[in-house]
Length: 346
Ligand code: SAM
Image 1 (cartoon, rainbow, N blue to C red):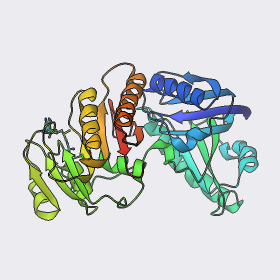
Image 2 (image 1 turned 90 degrees about the horizontal axis):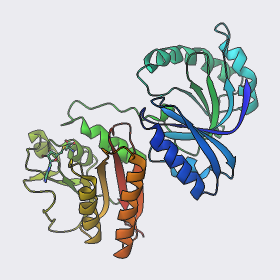
Image 3 (image 1 turned 30 degrees about the vertical axis):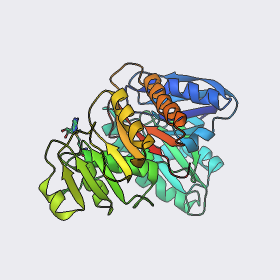
Image 4 (image 1 turned 90 degrees about the vertical axis):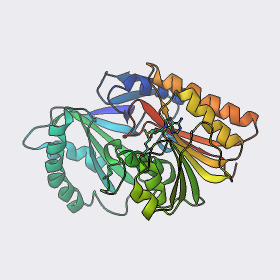
């Protein structure tokens, strides 16, 4: 085991390492921390070597392109195949006790075999940790064992108070009655930005570009009354069984008769156009919150995201609309990010 002080690990979708590296550099500088990222193309993660200052706040506030972010305590190399646990044990004793055990790997095509290995490894490790009192309910940290392959990787620790999914991925199952797979994206977005269950204060919504209805269904099954706007048809079951009404109209020109709590938009269009549309809804007070996708076909996806979000923040501020803006490159996002804007209580 070798000690690796002040190194943080951030997971991302493979192919987005340079975006995450640029984001870490910017965000750490804003926190008064300095260091440098280390990234390999398509690896699915970035290491942040921190030289000065404290980037811990990033654990709480989250990153757009980082699926998780936590400090490393050690690296492990060439674990003996016959006794991996024995080799890891001194470090686990040093860092424990833990409330959760995360066995992680990058989200690459090659990781399927590693995932299988980790399922077996968990069966061996978890009971031993419990028996030794190193894994127990009353602890305030979680253990991350990040494997590059079955013998090499890193040990990390994060506070339990910061919610993180294992491997940076929220695994969701598509319900058979969901009108489209897109339903999963909205479910993931709501979990990420609003937590589990029906979000307080959201009773009415407009879904722009709603067909065939995955997003509308996701909202309606939480009891939210939805108006779905699309020239295309919505799944008829949605209209029969849920509080959803369909309006055949254009997302960019349609106006609600009265304000709603939430507007969502999944229209595939230029990001600047979607952004301007959402800005208009919030500035006009047609909706108090917004959740939407911004397509990012360009190479410098982090820089472009940042510029778009700043434009939105500045625009709302000029119209004296206070807002909290969050964005994430979700597991169900590909060349796009998902944005959540909340103007309530601001
Ligand atoms: N969120 C939907 C779901 O969960 O099933 C999928 C939306 S799909 C990606 C994009 C939709 O936007 C299409 O149904 C398309 O008809 C609609 N759309 C594109 N341009 C539009 C416009 N100008 N006005 C209204 N709908 C539009």
